[in-house]
Length: 545
Image 1 (tube, one colour):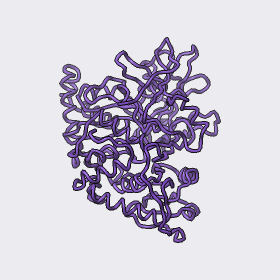
Image 2 (cartoon, rainbow, N blue to C red):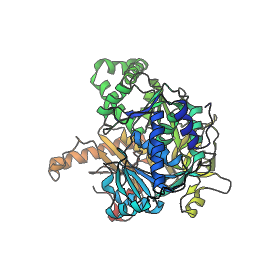
Image 3 (cartoon, rainbow, N blue to C red):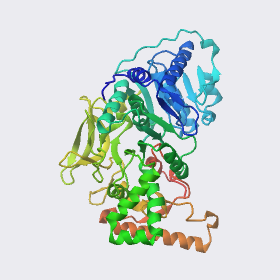
Image 4 (cartoon, rainbow, N blue to C red):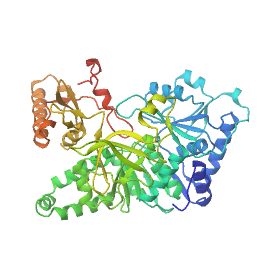
């Protein structure tokens, strides 16, 4: 990138001046549409309001909202003036919201109308300002705090820019302290992976409170003068396809679940229903991939150049299709603690199952490598690594060593060209009877390829592998539970899953039982199942069946 940024204030000042007349963001439906100059005007005014109520540099300002253009304004009104952002995911429960606000000591919150009910009257009373993010109107004002003496500052690169609370999939909430340098380096990493320009359009479908969307889906296009479009409605497949046709995006970020659903609901079914396509699949598969790939590109608007996939491992069957169809997908790997990029594949050069080489300026290695498998824990070092966990020195020390290496807790292997492949989480690896490593994610990938299956989770019970499976909505009529036909149907389907899986996995990865889940799995913002909720020993904590 021609301009090197040190802080988010640098990004804000540069882009609002250089791209002043260009459009920065807006809803597809037409509201909250801003040029870069209008964002500066609104942001400066909002920062002044915060200062009027004594909200100083280094004070915590929370955001609880769905993605929207106003989110960007609240972001810069906080970070570009030395305050500290506390973004919260819209999927959080009222209890989680309360805990985060208490732990972070936030003085102000920007909250959307849809999320306001999660704030208790007691919490609202404690806050200095509660501002509706939909229109920046006041929900609560502490008039006693109106002193007009708030102090802001030009932040330093190592100052805290944001504290992101995350439970991941295997533990309790952690407040990840990310610096201005962390975010700015991710902008630079993104630039070295895929160049953007001011004429490009991004389509946002992920929560802005997640570091993946915040850094690469919001900050990066803002730094490059591009335009980001947001969807006001829930991004169902129908809404999403309509949005892509209207925006015709050059770039967008997703998680595997989104493209996997498109593949299974569109590609697989389309081929199955067409005798011609079925014939091509059997006799001319290369031609089939190209034809279907062209149709998929048209569905995505026709000018897509970068389709970033991160958050969890992509299904191998789906990735194989994307590669053969010449779809411009890119896989990457990272964590909230690295803001988030660690590794990334180059557009046009994907390698199946690999997340690519280390990102620009990042050092990566494997620790405690198993000589038999070549697998070890991936550790990373660079300007992207967090400052630590807020108010949690012991947890910080457990993942950050004295030399600045961050221990990810992920098992990986590396090929001769330096490309890394993530095998699974250290904490989720199941040790088999003969000491072999069993990766539940790989078994789940096999299960999820079954058309009737919506989602799955493989766990260990009493020394055996058990698959918790959620079927698609139209598979069972739960009102018929207890009737002989219903029971027979369920038993037949679960047995078929066991047989199918055990024919397609190694000897030590075979499952013994399938448990049908009636309720959807609880998930994180990137649609990963909160695994720890389903692997507790206490029978009272087991999921409802």
